[in-house]
Length: 278
Image (cartoon, rainbow, N blue to C red; front, side, top):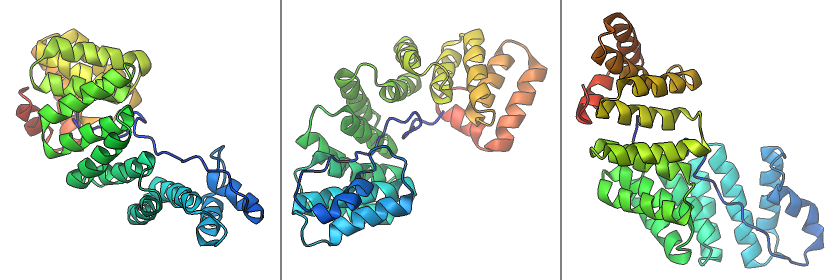
């Protein structure tokens, strides 16, 4: 049910920069480790390869920037966010015109829920590459974190314009539209997202909420049930399904779902009430 669904459906992808050609033959092995093109090497080996490139006096600045970026990606994926930021900082110092490095730093700030820093970085990434839907999407997520629904909606719409199949953007715009009472538009967005991710629990949860709020209780129950098959502990789907069952007069099953939801997330009723559903 959360409006902020950062990377829930693998939309916020880190960018592993391509390595420029250079003549430092002794680093060929380390170069390959740092690139890790098949994404199969141990973390320690990737870090070792990138670190060797960073420390070598034979490596041009833009190549070292790539090494910093790729090492930063490893740190990010292992939740070492401060080291990731430090490496992205160095990459940007060496090659400030590379939008991917700035975007990756934005993604760290989104993960840390530092909305202001994320907006600044994603805005810079969008300025350098206005046609990158990932940068626009993540700026939207940052606006969502700040509670700025209008700017978030505008950026989600722009990301969808750039990539009409962008499931994460469609899902999040679906959610914002449902909260705003734009039920048919919300359902259309979530249905579009489900074409790409038919069993994704978050999208099913969003459309279930849209159906619940619009009074289509059978459809809400169906979507919430699919979401719960993928994630049986999803409190918003349990609570939403419980409310839909309650509206249909199925008191016993409704009570069980609602109780299970409150056990997982005690404030779930207040959250639904905040969005106009109780």
